[in-house]
Amino acid sequence: MISVKLDREYYHLQADMEKWCTENLGPGMWGDLGKMPDCIWSIASNFGITFFTFRTEKQASMFLLRWW
Image 1 (spheres, one colour):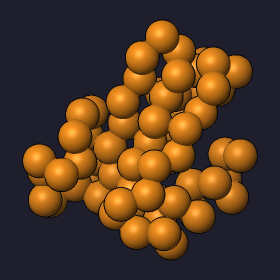
Image 2 (cartoon, rainbow, N blue to C red):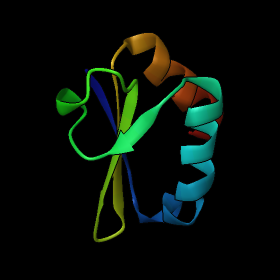
Image 3 (cartoon, one colour):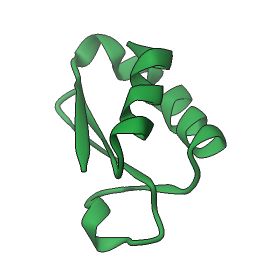
Image 4 (cartoon, rainbow, N blue to C red):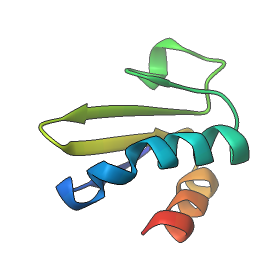
């Protein structure tokens, strides 16, 4: 699994990022990706720092190309 850490400057985009992931990658969830085998990505946020976790490097790369 590949995790992408986004600083507070991206926090306001979190809902748009979630929507993009669902539309372009498939089902996702909040929390631990390892607990949900049907999900492709997950999101966790704490104090404005957001982590997106993806099952494959290709999925993480697609996300980074769109949002970074």
